[in-house]
Length: 269
Image (cartoon, rainbow, N blue to C red):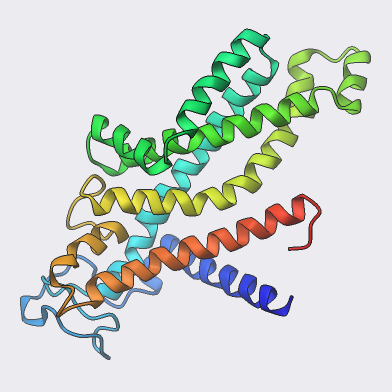
C-alpha cells in the first residue's frame, strides 16, 4: 500500500514537471533549443549541457524540455478529440434503432481488431506527415474504444431510475440526454482518457520516430529519438534522454489513470 502511494506521488510529481515544461518551457530550459554550435557537437552530459549536445551542437536538455509541449500536446489533442467523437458517436449508437446500432458496433469491432498504432500509421500515411495529421491519425485509432464505452454507458443510463423519472415528468428527450445521460457517460470516458493519454503520446512519438510527424529542427521527443539512432554507440544521450521522457510520461499517466479508474469503480487503488 505504501509503495503504491509512493508510486502515485512520484507519477503525479513527474506529470506536474512535464506540464510545467509544456506550458512554460523557458522556465526550465537552459539554452535555445534551436541554436546550433558545431564546435560543441556531440558533447557528453556535463555542467555546461546537462543532457549533452547533438550532432549540431544543440542542447539536448533544452530540446527535451521544449519537446514536452509538442509531444504531450499532440497526445492531449488526440485524446480530447477521441473523447468528444466517442461521446457523440457512442451515445448516438446507444439510442439508435437496433439495426443502426449493430452496424455501428460491427464497424467499431473491426477497428478494435487492429492495433492502434497500425491504424494510426495507415491514416497518417494517407494524410501525409505533419503534427496535425499525426493528431488526427492517433484520434481515429483511439476513438473506437471510447465509442464502445460511450454506447455501453448510454444504454445503461437511459434505463436508470432518475432518467425514467425525468421522462415521466415530461422532460424532453434532448434535455434528458444532455442533463442526465451525457454527464455520466462523459465521466466514464474521462477516467478512461487518463490512461489513453499515455497511449496517444506513445503512438504520436512512434509516428514521429518514423519521420511522419513534425520535421527538423522542431524539438519533438520521437523525432529526437530517431535523430540519435545512428550515433547511439558514441553519443547515447541524444536518444536516451528523450526516450526516458517518453517512457516516464507514459508510465506516470498510466499509473494515475489506473488509480482514478480503480477509485471510480469503488476498488482500492
